[in-house]
Image (cartoon, rainbow, N blue to C red; front, side, top):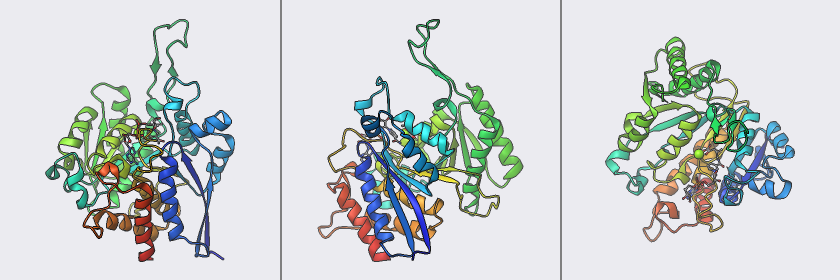
Amino acid sequence: MPSKSFRIVVLSGDGIGPEVVAEAVKVLKVLFPEGSDVELKLEEHIFGGCAIEKLGEPLPKSTLDACLTADAILMGSIGGPKWGVDAKVRPEPGLLALRKALGVYANIRPASFASDSLLSLSPLKEHVTKGVDIIVVRELIGGVYFGARQELGASEAEKDLAWDNMAYSVPEVQRITRVAAKIAMAANPPLPIHSVDKANVLATSRLWRKVVTDTLRDEFPAIALDHIFVDNASMQIVANPRKLNGVVLTENLFGDILSDEASVIPGSLGLLPSASLAGAPPSDVSSATFKPTSGLYEPIHGSAPDIAGQGIANPIGTILSAALLLRYSLGLEKQAALIETAVRKVLDAKSAGGLELRTRDLGGEVRTTEMGDAIAGVVRQML
Ligand SMILES: NC(=O)C1=CN([C@@H]2O[C@H](COP(=O)(O)OP(=O)(O)OC[C@H]3O[C@@H](n4cnc5c(N)ncnc54)[C@H](O)[C@@H]3O)[C@@H](O)[C@H]2O)C=CC1
Ligand SMILES: CC(C)CC(=O)C(=O)O
Ligand SMILES: [Mg+2]
């Protein structure tokens, strides 16, 4: 009998989603084979464009119910040209609805999981990317993605007008600031927090700046805080990213954009994982972990229709997302770290022919399944 058993909902989704999720599942099955002390019960559920095809909606009730009662959710990606921006029913609102229903307001995106062996593969120069260590903490269920909106043609009175409403409340900004602070305080000395906004223009950003400043001053005085406008931050991320070392704390839209941009530093969007968490962070500031009441884990990339079905996607972002799932939702830090070490070892290894293991996005020829096999193999050796 296992001493611990967890229900993990798997949402492979669309495009490269099923290809990369299969590799993360492969790694999890090596870590927790049948009969081991920890049992992972993996349940696949339909989500995204494939659910629209089959059931007419991206987030069927059975999928939502499964997610709401799971110990954690591992997701691939959703979307694709078949359900493009003009389609009547699209996958992306299903993802937003899932995040909202789970209450996962804290999106943690370690933006520089890298090994020095990748430095030469970044489009940026090595002297720019060396020593970069950025964690993006993005507010995930507020702001303009969730405000009221009006589509073009939806209003008789406003025939030529479409609009999106961006709103933030004080409690929404306080809670994400506390998550960023807990992450910053887990390091010794505490990491600095760089809060990114557009307070020179937007009312929501002025609220953001005030709440971040007040919360850190009153509750976390040991943390060094600076504020940076988003246009400047987007330039610094590629020109001088070490300037943003530490925690980059920002709202939903800016965090979406800046985290994709930050993936240029390690060299590929396919490398970066994310954790989306609900619940209050621990009150003990010395605690490194945030025990969420709900956790959704997905790579930061989308369904990559341009390479879907070719077996060449990089599965590392999804495999590292599975590691974050073990760390945050299941409290299995040792196994999480083991996956991260295995990924690093594979990236640093030379094959028999002297060639490094690299998928196409990193300039190599290694296929998705081969990368998954290599990481699973190293995990097996390390057990
Ligand atoms: N969380 C999610 O499910 C997300 C879904 N999307 C959706 O994905 C669809 C495609 O969006 P795009 O703008 O093309 O963004 P994308 O992130 O899917 O792809 C951007 C570029 O990065 C490459 N790429 C992405 N992941 C990769 C991987 N693992 N390995 C190698 N290369 C990779 C793609 O080939 C493409 O050239 C859209 O429908 C979009 O709405 C976009 C972002 C997040
Ligand atoms: C597809 C969107 C709903 C979200 C997105 O791009 C992201 O969270 O990275
Ligand atoms: Mg995105």
